[in-house]
Image (cartoon, rainbow, N blue to C red; front, side):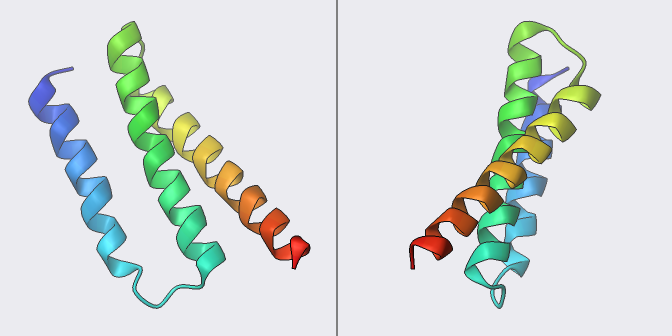
Length: 78
């Protein structure tokens, strides 16, 4: 995968976060975690020579799930 394509994907993910102005903290955190996870998944697959179509969604799911679990644990602390 070329560097330009990777940069374009990362930019599109970050620009998508601009629509998050009226989300709750949990929803915003989950969405941000998913976007960051997708970026990490893309970078990881590029660095290791893996298939990007697998790395981005796996990273996104892991980031969103991690963020959601963190937000829920913070809420329960009270």
